[in-house]
Amino acid sequence: MAQVVDTSDFYPGLKIRWQEGIWEVIEFQHHKMGRGGATVRTKMRNVDTGSTIENSFRSGEKFERIIYEDKPAQFSYMSGDDYIFMDLSTYDEMPISREVLGDVADYLVDNLEVQIEFFEGKIMGIEMPKSVELRVTDTPPGFKGDTVSSSGKPATLETGIVITVPLFINVDDTIIVDTRTGEYLERGRKQEERRG
Image (cartoon, rainbow, N blue to C red; front, side, top):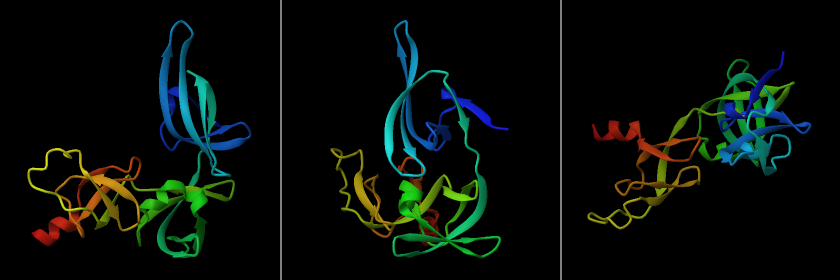
């Protein structure tokens, strides 16, 4: 029995069937128009091809929600362009390409546990924890009294991704990052243990 969702149910990561394909909602925004009703502008990624498009739907338009079968797995290592995961129930290795993973590959660290999503026997992607702990490998020093750039400074993390962090964060600090938005959340727990 197919589960039906409409535009009011959209959230980043939702997978729907649309135009003969499976699409993942990346971003969405509701727009109210004069008398014409409302629309929802979306940015979506085709799960098979990796291509992204922007499209508007009428508010309330209905879609079939794609429900995946999840398998617990652990990220093991990189092999060429593939990310190798170990199935935690069978211990089999499963290679997944960067195209299938999308931007979540920027948050993968050794031994991270994820859910691999299958649909009709095919790997469609992975479901990440909502946040991960990553080490800062490069960031400029913060200066006391530097209020001009109080919004933060860039930091390169161990996976190569660059995000904005508060001025008090230094190289080798560990921080918690939101995997859905790429935003700094707080100082890492490993950090607190070292200080304590």
